[in-house]
Amino acid sequence: MTRDKIKFVLIGGFLGAGKTTLVGELARRYTAQGKRVGIITNDQTDNLVDTQNLRSQGFDVGEVSGACFCCSFNELVATADGFTDDDIPDVVLAEPVGSCTDLVATVILPLQNLLGSRFDLAPFGVILKPSHGKRILSNQKGKTRSGFSPQAEYIFRKQLEEADYLMIGRIDQLSDQDVANLRERLGEIRPDVPVITVSPKTGQGVDGVIQQIDNASTAKRRLLDIDYDTYADGEAELGWVNLTAMVETGEQPVDLDDLTQTLVATIAKHVIEDGKGNIAHLKVSALGGDTQSVANLVANDAAVDVGLLAGRSVSGSVQLIVNARVAMDPDDLESHCRQAVDSLGVQQHLTFNSVTAHSLRPGRPNPTHRVVR
Image (cartoon, rainbow, N blue to C red; front, side, top):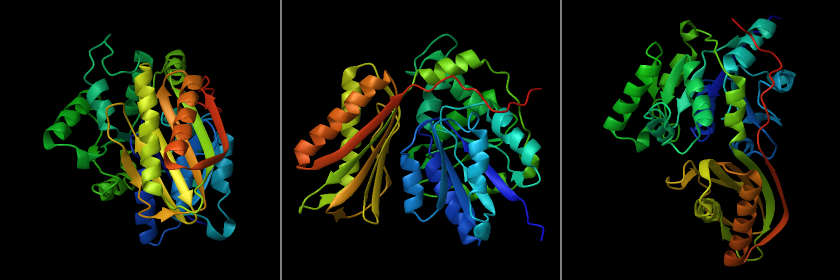
């Protein structure tokens, strides 16, 4: 029997743009349509909050860790193949590392050229984090008011350049004037692509995203002129820390939402007081039994946001995962994360066991495949 092609949807965007929340909402809507959905997450190392978050919502999630999709292309394909034969998905939603670009040349076109008989490659959408958009897109050439280096800004701008459609995210937090200003700035950079507004958290605009995904004529497959030295320098600016721990609450229940929000705020306080770090994305997950809370922060001056609300307290063992992406030395960042965990344990009379952390700077991108002009 001939099977229909699997629709492969890649959702890009810089760290903290809201990709995971959008992927989860897209998965819910496709599932409501009676379609089977597979999700693939991606990170430079393992123990990913996003994977745990999406699995806790009941989705079938595979994870590609250790490198970005472009550098782990074969693992990406193997993960897509790993969804069982009895439940082959109709749609695969893939979320690449937020510091990656050149994805059309290194992921989309190689999939299309090598595996086009199996996958229907959807138009490539990139979601914009408004706080970064306001700061980076207003920069004049040669100035760095955004808090990121020119190399990191280079990655951000290249992500916008290769998109088939752009999404202004978090519109529930923006005024009409904010949206108009961002549209104007994006129009100066990409006057030829659709720009839609979306709030992954509230669901506003997500139907418009699905319309773009289903509009094959939107796919232009733009190949970038990209300087891999500048790209590599931009990625290397970011410190990357994934920390895991088991929390023993004893007989006293702990409020999971308070736990995640307090830990995010405490890590951020350490980073900001250090005076050297610029937060790109900071996420904390706490999973107790079948209940999970996720809190995150997307900038030094942003408020802590609840990505997933547990709504209750639990006692016993709680699995804690911290994913921190900050423009600073990764060893210093790991130290701040560990200090925050220690101080939280003292304040809330919690015992933290099996605390492990992996800190790194992303290495130079070395794509498995790259299509050139």
